[in-house]
Image 1: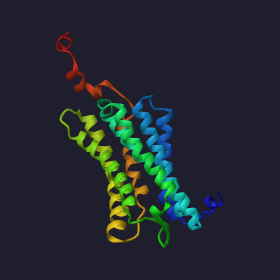
Image 2: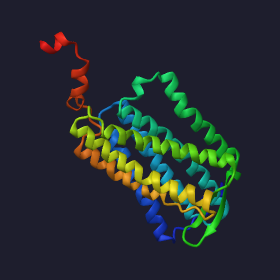
Image 3: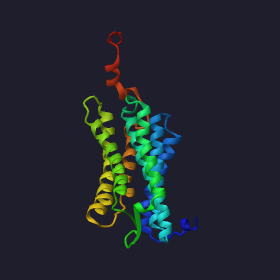
Image 4: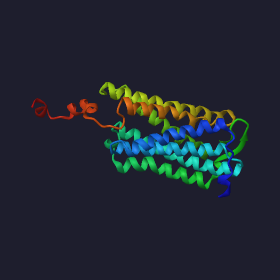
Length: 261
């Protein structure tokens, strides 16, 4: 337990890159959990940003650790929070776009959370899936081991991120969406795409295929999603359900006689 507290906060740049984004997401969580209307969409969004804040905080502690042992322990926690972020991100995106209710819950929930549980178990029980080593720029970095198991874990994380971004991009260009919802989905699609693509390039392609060190920029890049979600809450009522946003769907599903009346 002592290793957890072997920290060195003299790296001001690292502190700014990781802990300030975490504070932003913590603030968004506080607003969405305590002040937004109660709904399943809002609850999944709140848990998502809380997991993101936890991931960014743990990742920050990795890079301000004074020993490799402390960095290793915080990296394990960081991996757990990242896995939960992906799972709840998929859940949030499916609920917001209405896909969750179109598929049996007995299928959706296991498909989302069972792989996440398995990956969390592997991260805790098999620390050899990544290695911790010192870095002049980042103090410590965790580079994934070039094994099929490690690649499979990162592939699942990348697939979840691409799925989230892909859903929003797809719905942004659907003809049935009104202009407000279209802008909302487009904004969230961009917010998700920035950290996902940055993570795939810097933390998957580089270490797995070019043999270079992991470049831990994904947690900072998540700020793009934080900003996008904040704008979406203020301008496009992300956390406020209104029938105005669902008018096309309501009209299409109404009985013809009812519509005439």
